[in-house]
Image 1 (cartoon, rainbow, N blue to C red):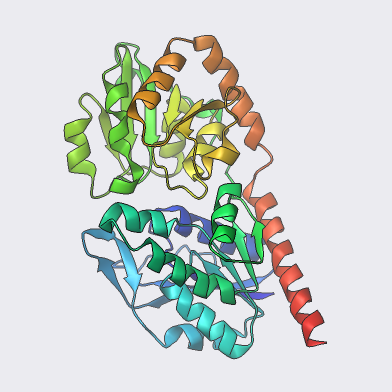
Image 2: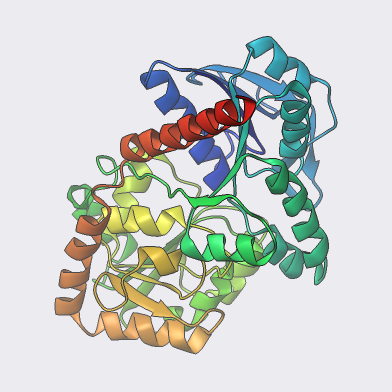
Length: 373
């Protein structure tokens, strides 16, 4: 198949949309298909040197107040690239700005499109501007409603889409690198560096932005014998350093370094309530680390409460602190949750999920052929 992946973000960006688009392109190449990626332009001209396929960059601007996020500008390059690639199918990754252009081009050219829902834009609108949820859903309905199929990453995301009038929804989760993220990456030297007095290491990994609610870890910072570790960067970093006393901020980490940090934690704590999937929870589980996460969105599918971790009410700092305290006081429980989490995700490799995605593509192509006949 000749597939065009139109994505709102692509490496060197570090986020779920970018990572999933990269893994999709890699898997298509491994399976003998021919992908093309269309993504917003980034500052580094050499950014695509290691990309698994050709990448067409569309002019973009940094998002005001959040320069790490770039938004594509209107461009004819999208339709021209799709046509020039002679695409059999268009894959829209987290469509909202660039994806709308991709959907319009696919419809004009008569090419089937699969839209992958990845970001709770309505939740972000509520967080950043206090309004705009209705407008976000109208835009999402427009692009997803025009697609041949929408793929939701979790049961909660699928319910949200269907509740807002979006049909033809199927589930498609995310893969995890179970070789890179592995309990064997646990590093005693790193633990001594981060917790010199033998403290329990509680870690957060992800963007440092208001919607992630990392401030909820303040209660965990105050627990005796607990050291909080924060991995990531973003606009909230300065404020979080002030509200999380004693926490270690390690900045952005990737690759083997990130895997080593994950495996060296005693508890992984995710705080954001707007996750459509939550890849970092899955990476922590693959690393054999018990998880504490909000009982909302993607974590509802990932965390088996009382077996692989604990689910707590969203936006509840007391509940989060109590869950961390309970695990800190119960080493035997942590020792049971970690292996159970690893076992739960061992079959969720990117290879398995990539083949599942190709299955969705083939079904859509067959459906189009049947309608045409």
